[in-house]
Length: 225
Picture (tube, one colour):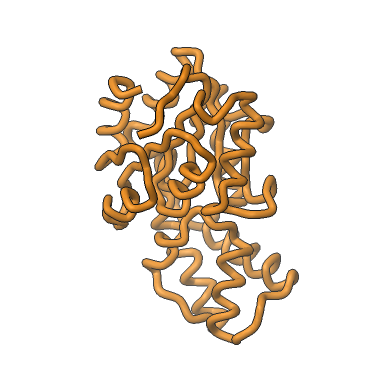
């Protein structure tokens, strides 16, 4: 288990960590895929959570058509998926997430968003749902990086925005690609089971600790940190 020198920053994934939004993402992806004739299964969007939309579209196009996706396809198909997501009922805040973020703020810990999403409708909600926690200058999104999770770039960028070292931060993520990214960035990594992914999938990425729910994480993580 990695050691934290002094906790100065907390880096949070968004979908499935701050918001219970992954079921909506899976529905939106599947609607787009079915209409576009792309081969897909709902569960794989949970597995690939954290990857950029462009990376997911490239995977779908390669599988279905045997070639890389064009830039136009990446842009246009993601726009369709984003519209379908926006048409669904708003995803709720993940139980326990607000309390965890607020406690970090209370302790003077810098809070940073590190998401692979480019879903503007959800990112914009952060300012209302988590006031003061994730200003634009402390948000890493799909538009901020050239290589998404599981590459360490997103979390390394989060460290840069917070102005801290890896041993001064903790990362929270619910998906294997996300915990892999944080582990590779050298950050103390907390995996949280919030969907169909088994805890073993997070443990196998090298996460320092895995909790079975966000309320469980919120209740116990400060004892550890």
